[in-house]
Image 1 (cartoon, rainbow, N blue to C red):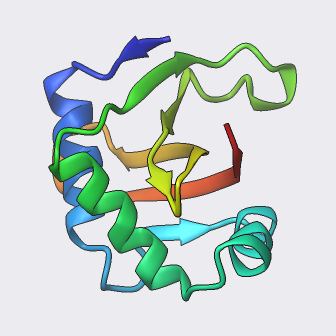
Image 2 (cartoon, rainbow, N blue to C red):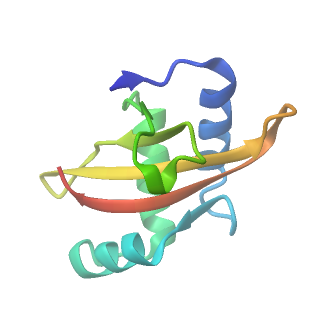
Length: 116
């Protein structure tokens, strides 16, 4: 794993999280939403805010080269490992933005969440 350091991707990631309170910037797969509902018990918008706060307070975003065949259309996914209620979570995300330079309108999809 390598820390996300690419300036454009990091800007897009942070911009998506900065819009956590608005629909369509941080979205959740059904798998991730169900895990959060069962294990964290908070609204998804609150979880998105947690992700934002984690990154803004210096939490690392790991950029992982995608090697799984079913996800081969993506080059990377991005992982967060915040501590929530005393437990380290693994949050797998993907970042979508117009690579023509539209850094102001990115979207993060939370693909999976579980204990690290």
